[in-house]
Length: 184
Image 1 (tube, rainbow, N blue to C red):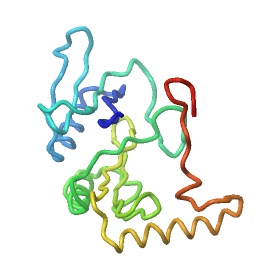
Image 2: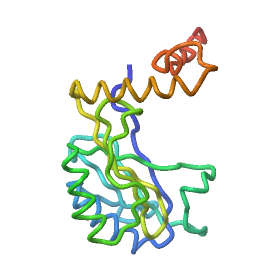
Image 3: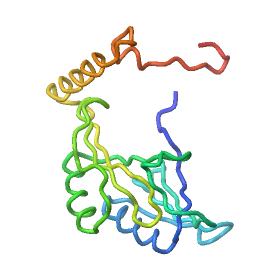
Image 4: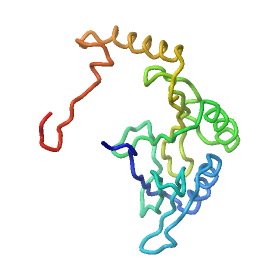
């Protein structure tokens, strides 16, 4: 069973030096550590949340060409990347203390999204240089009873608007994947 999730993600950015400056500020604010390749083999800068305890990390490399991304286009590729927040408070503090203060484009201000999972709280924003769409989200380890009720209510509301579903959404959404042996 896998338990760590994504190993790493790397983005090609339009202006490497400007992007490094922006990401240094953003990830620094969130408490990440950074390291880079020293241009050995290739040029890339990395950001890791739990350094030196190896976990997932984000890398950026200079793009050879291209144009600024717009997440509203839903073009092929990564739509957005979500970063873990320690708490709802950190989401709000990041919104006010970093995004607003640095005039970063916020596409969706901090809000609870009860249809995702109980207590899910997030802010969505765009990197100003390349346009990479980010989310800073908090999911409580143990949601409150009120958060659980809001989640259940949101799913029941969705179920009412989908007469084609024969099961409630918490069952309808589950999919079986093939195993190593090809059996489902």
